[in-house]
Length: 190
Image (cartoon, rainbow, N blue to C red; front, side):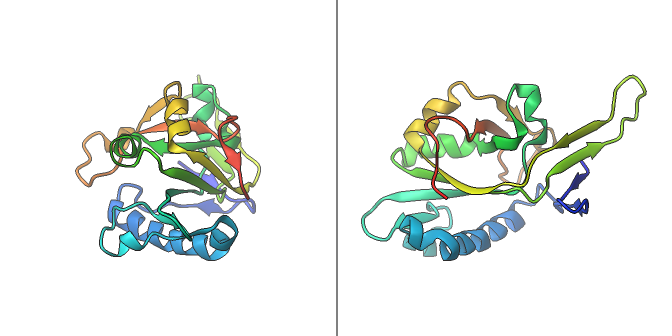
């Protein structure tokens, strides 16, 4: 799936199924997020993460409120086939929704979006079908939603199954909901 940044340089995402590498990447992103926006949003790295890597990512400066960070750098370019705009569509793993529903129903979710890839282009290999060329505008921001509100949103959200994860045994999410950040229950905070 060839993707390109704003300068037209190809963006590669190495092995998308290597969960361990992506978890390590996520920890680095959490620290960067807190350094950039933690003070403004009143957030720190959740101290429980020192003893439980699966604990929610963030907590408030004071109080027991928890939050999880969802870093999104690649638009869901083919969201239009679900009736969603690629510009504002992020993904939310079904397995995370199931876990929050059972263990953290009062958690808040932060979507930290910075579109690195802004174009998806694929030449057709069949003359009956046109080339695929989908572009979005560069975008940066942080959106917040309570899980209770997100759980209502996902009741009507499309659920995308990852074809390359059908036989996954690394613990990767096999399905994700598509979420439109323009939804009235989701607030842009940065």
